[in-house]
Amino acid sequence: MKRHFFNLTIAFLSTTLGFSQTILRANGPGNTYEDINTVLAPGYNAVETPDCAHHNFGRHIDEVFDAELNTNVFQFIAHVTPDNDRCKKYDRQRVEIKTYASSPDNLKAEEGETVHYKWMFKLPHNFKASSSFTHIHQIKAVGGPYASIPMITLTLREGNPDRLELRYTATNNQATIKTVDLNLLKGHWVSVSETINFANKGSYSIHITRVSNNASILNYTNSSMDTWQDGALFSRPKWGIYRSLKHRNAIKDEIIRFADFSIEELGPLSLSELQKRANNTMLVAVATKQLINFKTAKPKDYDAIEFYDGLGNIVALENRIKRFKLDISGLNSGEYYIVFKKSEQRVKVLKISI
Image (cartoon, rainbow, N blue to C red; front, side, top):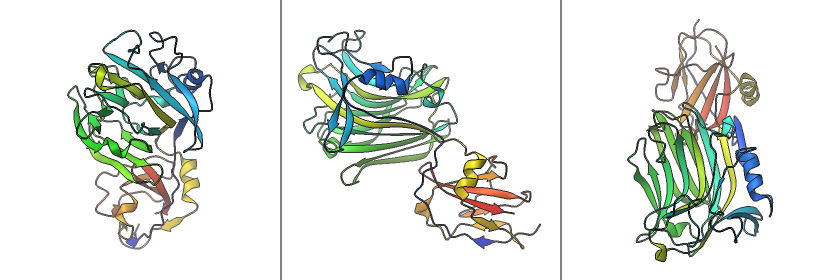
């Protein structure tokens, strides 16, 4: 069958195509632990706090109304004394939430999956970071030889100036890959968007922006990154305050606010989703040539392409993408779908008839 070489002009949509999304939002004072567990581990316990050492204070995670966001948010509370790490370790303290083995499967990342994590947080304007570590987010493996060390960590560290560090390891030698001045975050609500394709040849991106004016604070993208710690059963996120007590005199009691935790699997689209998102946009390939040209699309509008056949099966793109051109030679006649992605989010679906 002869085919035509044609240009494709793309009007990108703002719609994000999701696969499976779970959202944890504060809903007002009371039953905070129960609300967290209902979302992250129904029937189990996804909360790690020092309540056992500081039972007179009560719960170390609560919910309050935040005037700036005009909604309820979570407060994670850490006291220099007597809080510790669940009465198990006394040189550090932990107030965290997590997913883990008892969580639903869609909240545990398996090898080959792509997951989008989103949340917001606010540090006090006078926050004091430890010179050792103050972790506020981790991606950790469960199982395997590297389970004891997080693959990804956001940590706050005392310095000149104090800084937020993005740290990474695929094994057990974690290193800092990006830093920003912590003063850019103190006293401001910020939004975090983190996307991980979990694989030995995976990808990672994180973007932190200020909520009030959408100013960019931290951006990091690596499209070729080992994001699977060998031997792991699954990977999962943690959020909260996990800090060293090595230099107690240099830190103080702290409250960090968090809001709107989201875990979204970005798996292959079903045929019905493809048909719905294509919006009846039909491009017909006829005549002589065997390439579809995306040259008229702006490079900033997409950074990856998925290709599906008419049954909703993914068609391998290896050796088919050649600079803004998709080689359709050798494909059977029928309908196909091109999915354009930006930062792992699907932003446009087009249908092709060959």
